[in-house]
Amino acid sequence: MSRTTPAGTPLGDSFHVFDTTLRDGAQREGISYSVADKLAVARLLDEVGVGFIEGGWPGALPKDTEFFARARELDFTHAALVAFGSTRRAGTTAEADPQVRALLDSQAPVVTLVAKSDRRHIERALRTDVAEATLMVRDTVSFLRREGRRVFLDAEHFFDGYAYDPDTALAVLTAAVEAGADVAVLCDTNGGQLPLQLADTVGEVIARTGFRVGIHCQDDTGCAVANSVAAVQAGATHVQCTANGYGERAGNADLFAVVGNLVTKLGMPVIPAESVPELSRVSHALAEIANIAPDTHQAFVGSSAFAHKAGLHASAIKVDPLLYNHIDPTVVGNDMRVLVTEMAGRASLELKGRELGVDLAGQPEVLNSAVRKVKELESRGWSFEAADASLELLLRHELSEVDEPPFRLESYRVIIDHSIDSAVVAEATVKLHVHGERVLATAEGNGPVHALDAALRKALLPHLPWLADVQLTDYKVRILVDHPGTDAVTRVLVESTDGEREWTTVGVHGNIVEASWLALCDALVHKAMRARVAVS
Image (cartoon, rainbow, N blue to C red; front, side, top):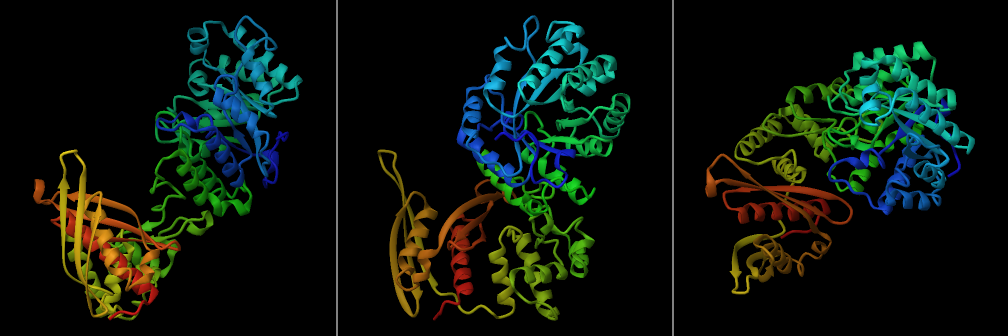
């Protein structure tokens, strides 16, 4: 906890990866971290090797005050903990300002002070003049330095302020650095900058002042990552980011994209080498803590970041994966996927088969037949890019590698009972043939699919004991719009697990129950095939 510099990072104190997920990232709409959440986030950020973790605003927010009290128990491997706060108020002293005192009470070894650097904000928002504003910066930095704290200055609205009145913007930086601040962080607070103009400003500021500068970018133009990288190329040696780009409005520069670019494109070892393959895992873990679904299309770490659908891509990837991947996905802990859809060709299916453990090489007739079936089924609403297990079954059927399923349906029936007390109960009855024996089972559920799944399990479990390990973990329904109203076709995706692996199957039909039945059956047949369960 007492560390004021990064530890164990390859570039040491010469380059800072500064994370503000717990402060700026927490301002995203829909995020509300508990103190336990904040502690878990901090541990994960330290695991991935960031140099500084900004924990929040002690004194201003009770939750943040509690976080800093509990964070003293954390034993970071790489990071130093940072408290965020404002300079003293106008007309008082730093020693007497309770907000500044709260920064000391947090016992964080590093403090980031925010100060307005746009004269319009100084005069209209702070309602003071430039002389007093710079004195507020100078006094607060000096006081914190005397108390043994390392200080960074966030120059709020810097780029807008520099364009409007560069002398005022630079005066704020000068006051901080002369008082002992280590880094002057140039903030694109409104997120309105573009990479070339931002890089020009960063380079100009460094040339005029000789100060060590950092960069903090919002994403309102969609350029936060590009702006951050451009600033580094222009000379910034401190970059502030948030996990997955979380932040208010359009968000902040995404930590994983910024680090991914610095490491793989600029060759800058800004985090430990062993942490780079952890980027994807940590990104997804942080999304879970924030209770936000991971962005599947997120650069570097999204599950679709290296997913290829077009047949033209697949043909080239078959020769050399790097022909259509900008890096080896495993470098950042991700993986390449080939998606099979109506756009797929033979190369796509062959590569996808290889991924699924199905060898289709040297079998053009099988490939041609499989491609025709995939295209025909996709035209009717099936989606194999999200249902690898159903695709594997299709391919193995083409290779005659799938025996008869472990059970055969005679019939099923589902009844919905809506009672006078508003309780809704579904009852399903299934009639099956298993190992040559006719089996009948009835079960109830809170809906038709739940009841059908329960009846199916009840009928099969005495004959197929491995079924006890299989659980349905997710169920998604999409109404396809090819047919109007209640005549529309329904696509159902079922995710299953046996505790060791997960798989997804798909069913499509005009009746939602039948679509669900097809997906459920595929899930069990796939498990039986993978487990080489004896069938009749």
